[in-house]
Length: 174
Image (tube, rainbow, N blue to C red; front, side, top):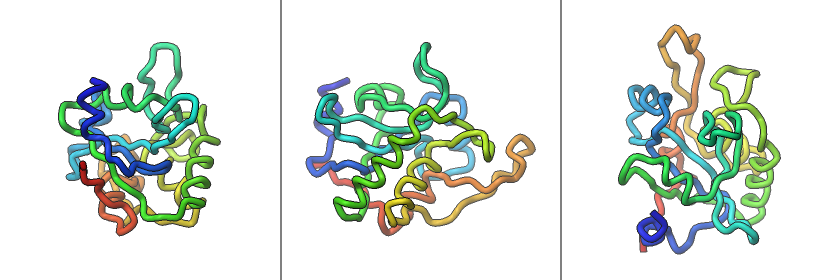
């Protein structure tokens, strides 16, 4: 998968930018039933000097030896869990200083539980919105209620709430 994704990787990708996918997790199908963005999962780009391009995200466990939660995976691994042709990169309209704060905030949460239930952990869109919020940048346009008994009619941030923000801009492939 490495060669095919390298062609689609934006040349101007920076720390803190977002990468969306339609994932292969069960929860992905639930999300896509109520969200029209075409995506079910999001992570934040972290360009590590030692490890290259990484993705910070909160997810049900995708590794046999790692529990559900906020984790850091290589971009290759993140993309490998996507359905074909469903990965897109979005730039965040922000300063370099805000990017540092957002990435640090997300990294500080590595190991925290994944959960859609308040007070029990964090889910993917919530992670990136809160990280950018700490950096003083708003990247979401509201929330939506899930009218399903299991979700207790809680307000959620869906991928569509992010990609409709004026600070979240689709990266065009060069």
